[in-house]
Image 1 (cartoon, rainbow over the protein chains, first blue to last red):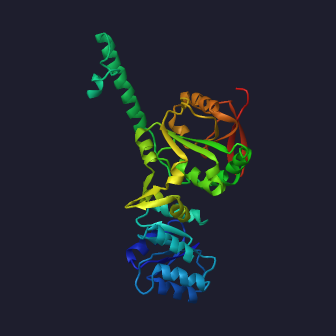
Image 2 (cartoon, rainbow over the protein chains, first blue to last red):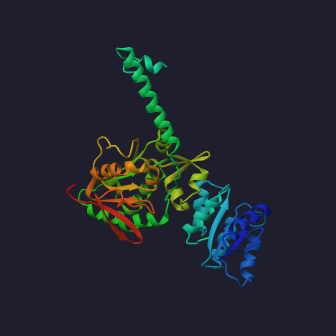
Image 3 (cartoon, rainbow over the protein chains, first blue to last red):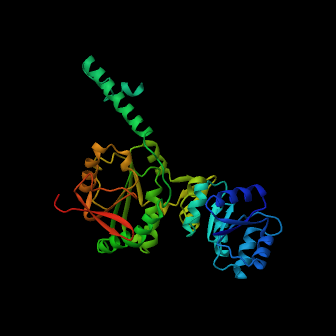
Length: 123
Length: 244
């Protein structure tokens, strides 16, 4: 299983990578939405899921999920927003733009695992 | 101390022996309760055990809904409900499965031995770590209101649920027969000597065509012959034997 971790915090990317790699998930990283889209366009490898932060420079997670769904980049790829944003209206917008799930920071390893399992991803 | 001065308190007794006896038994009961609560696990989450909730959504609840369609009434008992997530999860499933839910008489009774967890369940407010576990985002926005750092269950779901402090060995006062009983992930915490009584109590309070669901890996056969097992969609269910 392959994951794309998109977050402007190197610490958070590293934390998520460690949690996922423990379960045998191969990870790639991007520092913002723009870089994530570039990776998805040029990279021939397919990702099973993307963990996407929201507040990032250049391109936010919300803009990113909207753009990648409109362009059908990785149409089978599940997208989970991983963010401190937690207003109902925000969550609804993200889901309407094409996100599949939402995990609020801070989260536990178990919380992450449960959310992935919920999306049919047994990490 | 104030309590003992009230009529009916431990000191409202005629003889010194009786007063002492009441004081001791009151204290022992309190200690027993405190020890039991301290030894009880309160591990829970929304939609805990996806397989079981898929079975509820796809098999158990649709069958119960069909069986009760004429009277439009459903009674669910979540025994050992802890902080309430299981009861609210069942309520969310019923909201999904019953488009005309407002025309049904639905009551989900959650019970637990612990006063603190029952108060928590009644409050219906959950922290970030709790809504982050097991609860799909779509259900979070549909059924919860954000209140500062907490998420509160919306009134339309709360009105379906009732929480009571109760021992699973003791009959629930005034309860109607339950169509569905969830007694999940709790058997290990009950002394083996009491399990027969627990199943007898559950059996007494179930509708004749009701369903009992235990936790994954839990079974009733070793402790009671009041139920028979059915297997469907990778889950075991128990039906009450008739005429007991």
